Image (cartoon, rainbow, N blue to C red; front, side, top):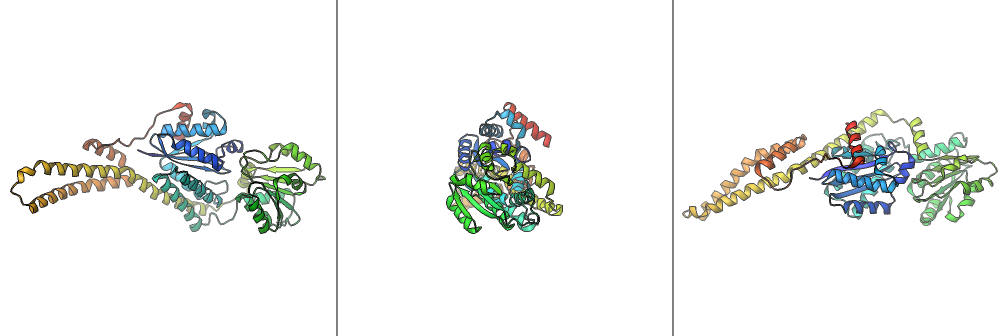
Length: 451
């Protein structure tokens, strides 16, 4: 019997320093999916990795072994021991996985509640798993329903209508740090390092406040040119970064580089040319692009994702009525998924029961074939039809009750009893509850405490 499980960290459970070590580039995510699905007990896998979370979603026949494997993969990524990582991880199983993912896709678990970016990030993670051949019927249904739930929340509630995002919070931080009144940044020069979506959104937020942007990119220089034209700015190659840092007032860095792009010593040389002009740096990359030690330089103000999270906590107010409505919509969609997944438990048993009954009918008819020499062919057909009708009616009520039990979460005992009484082939549905190593034991204890 397959079981859903998820393992991960988010801005709620892990500091930025750990989240950046667990961040998965697209290539690394593909390798992780391949490694996990190569294991006998794991049949389906999807990996989500954003600036605020890294999560693995699995469909497995042995939940404990799969959880242990996923923990080992994440520990290697973070270059730490599984037991040390376990304290920051959350581990979910069964319907808890759906409840969590649906809330994630709806933006209800985000640092900024209702933010729209996560919908696209979940979709891209699912599409990557599809391309890598790592998904299957259960994860396909799970992620499609989660994306639909996210769409329902955004179209049927106002939880995301405030247009507050990481980009707008970053822009406001920059404005306040430079002491600008109102929202006018027309006299400020913005340097955007990277040409990704987050950088584009932050550039848009700053541009809306009048700032002029210069885009720096290496691998995606053509995209940087396109963004520069859109925002009436310019694009420069990465090797011109030091000169641009010397002129900028605001720097937004958001690349997918696994290594730091700006160190303390490099920026110290630049600040000497700036004649005490203040420089605000917003590093929204995970892993971080900017050395945290640049905070020590005079005139330099650095914000990273943890700083933005604190700012959000202080200033963001989501209307509780809209958030409550959104939760109800998510709960409704989770219930639909629960009904579907519950049916997966009983349908094989119903099919096996009917197959067993039909095989008995065939056997009895064959055993008595010679006893009915006087029967015409038409009479033989009538006997066969009557026997099959009798069996169908006999199984009708148990089938209805089995399906009703699935709808009410009471099918497990019924399925187990039915398969035992009728000697149906195949293993009984089981829920593994074994311990497998100290790290997995820790995760199980955390799960029990949450309950």
